Length: 193
Image 1 (cartoon, helix red, strand yellow):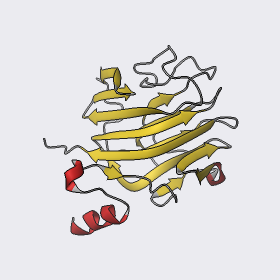
Image 2 (cartoon, helix red, strand yellow):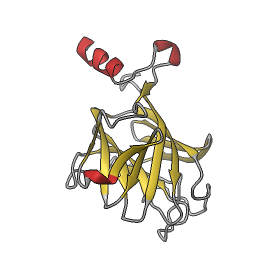
Image 3 (cartoon, one colour):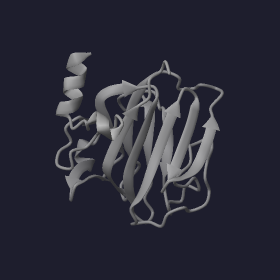
Image 4 (tube, helix red, strand yellow):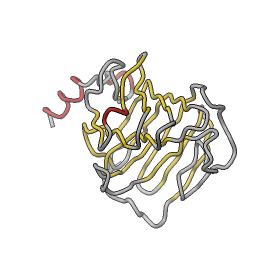
């Protein structure tokens, strides 16, 4: 336990005064992150993780999680498609996990703020090429998604399809999609609360 705490602090964990939030990205490197394929699609530019290239996912490999509060500032290009995966298995063949959708104008009708294939959003909540905040709160089978502080999904997933711990991951959906993430923060939620 002590080594795990030290590892978290070395990766940019914030103090207890910040209510347990952990900084997931230092703004300079991909330390703690690993692509499952097409690693060259992921770079750091201007203090953001940028996905631009062939399909793949970028996993936060510091630890697997079951319950958490995860938020990020996100920007997606016109026609782009992405997502914030959780409880996902590592690798292209790993368990799919859940996805908080990121899509302003891509041809997929499922837009930003939805829980993909469980509780979808069909209206455009944010224009393309605009920074917004997406927050994903998961406690057991209860999922809440917020866009710019507004609840877009408050859903109990009764099938428990992905009920085990898994990784958090960023999606690069397809060549032509350009997505940026910055100010990513995580607050684990204890399973026994």
